[in-house]
Amino acid sequence: MKFLLYLSLLNLTLLSQDLSLDQALSLLEHQNLEVKMANYDVESANLTQEISHSYHYGKMDFTQNIMRSNDAANVFGFKLTSRKASFNDFGFSEFGNIPMTTPIQGLNYPDERNFFQSKLSYELPIYTGNKISAYENITREMKHIALLDRNEQINTKRYETRKAFFDMALLEGSLTNLNLIYLNIEKLEEMTKEMIFEGYAKKVDLLEVQSKKANLSRVIIELKSNKELLYHYLSFLLNQKVTAIELPNYDLQEPKLSETQIIESNIDIKKAIAALNIHEHILNSEKSRYLPSIGAMAEVQTSDDSFLGEASDHSSYTLGVQLTWNVFSGGADSAAIESSRIQRLKMQTQTELAKKGISLKIKEIQTNIKKANSEISNLRVELTLARDIYQNYEGRYKEQLSSMSDVIIKQSSWLEKVLALLKAENTRNKQIFALEKLGTLTSGDTL
Image (cartoon, rainbow, N blue to C red):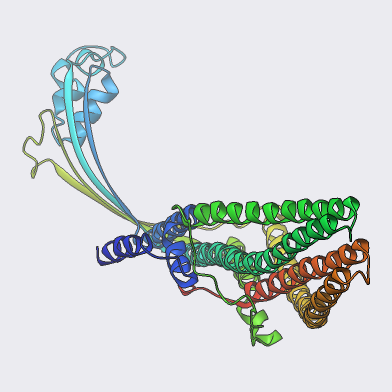
């Protein structure tokens, strides 16, 4: 109830201010529909584990039989179970000087009889060769995998949310640069018109400027459309409408995680280890084929021709212990055990392969980050230089020392550097997010 109140207050607060990244991540874990579905899987796995644990306690059943019959065997059985059988039921009243082969009328053609039986039975497994324990361990590992799947889903959505925020920051930074270029083109357009009026420029110069202005306008519209799509995507992730966010610093810091830390905390590796444990428990279960099973049972009942009639006088009980032991199966048991052992060895190899694959992925991402860092550093210098060169050529054109084509070329170079820097920074951020996703765990990973 407290959390629901907090969530309601948070939603009301967000209506009056820009959504921050921390607020978005807090909402994500509780409102994202895919995370909710993963939570249901965890609850289901938890209930399956409870079911497996309940097998240790056996089962108790209550049975109420209500019958009516004139079948000779049934009627005699009803009377015997109710402790009401008499000599007359065997036809003793008909004995006399009659042949021994003569059918007994009273026994063969009894009157109809009601039968009410109330029975309570309990069965308890005493020893199953570790089958129940193995099954319980398997369901525990399945619950662990469900938790890891839920955390993986949260990590994926956190990755997508953070990436959307940083993509928005990059778009805003690029739009700032592009709007500055657009303003310069507008000034250049006005200057060209004045120079045409004074006879120092040609109409073709104005057409070149207007063509470049239209091209830049198209790029700005495309980036604004991308912003709108990002807001739609954030609304989908958070399961609520998002129209404004608080932009983070788009110069994202590289995480300080060692290769060992990443591998140890990687969810895919943890899932592989859990799967390996499952195969270990399956092997233990298969080994129980060579062992006996022992079970106990207890049963109490009362029966009469009326419901609970003279219940205490007509009650009975049964107690027992049963041992079953398969002593021969034509080699099927040993084959099943060997098959489980091979599957476990295969799973061990897959786990080692997964670790090697993660290690290779880490090195690849770290190399890409270094490459992107170098490219960004160079592009920032080139961007500053391209802007200065453009401004220089703009002044030279005004003094008729360079052509409009030269100015447009330099302006295109400036625009090219802006877009190249956007692409490089976006690539770097994607690699950093990918590295964080490999080695970051969310809360709730424990059993």
